[in-house]
Image (cartoon, rainbow, N blue to C red):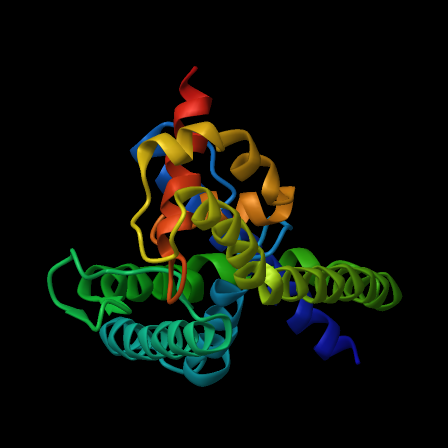
Length: 242
């Protein structure tokens, strides 16, 4: 039980680390804070899952080049599968590397592979020994309590987020229906005048969690009503600049 608790706490730690990494990249590039997490909490589970896979699969590898290459392949495979499953489940593409060189179907790219491989080497050589040393100092009971509380919060966040995303498509359809009626035909493309007249309706149509997810993933593309999503982003960005 202690080992499971330690693994889960490490998983969450690396998920938080991944969130900080993603947020920092956007902060440096765009000079603004964006909660880059898929979930509401400050964590990106794909980083935690990738880190634990590397530790479990390659924990005995001592050759750094082999560790780099193996980790890059495994993490890119995980990212590709995650992208594919999320698109199938939510009918949306969450990230797209099509504009980067050496990408595969826009789901993974060479730059990402290099980043994953580098982080894996740092993880094995520097980060994980320090993390296990830190959490290893906790009494077994304290470690289990921390893991249990964290697991409850994490699973609650997962359920809440998945429920919201499952209804996002329906919410977009309702907003689209209203604007289509105003435009007088469902076949007519979005008109600037129609959108401008109903900006307030569009801004307040989504709850805070839906708005956060839409703004956190600027490359999010929906299979249906993607025009509505783009319109919401444009209006939100314009309002923030005022």
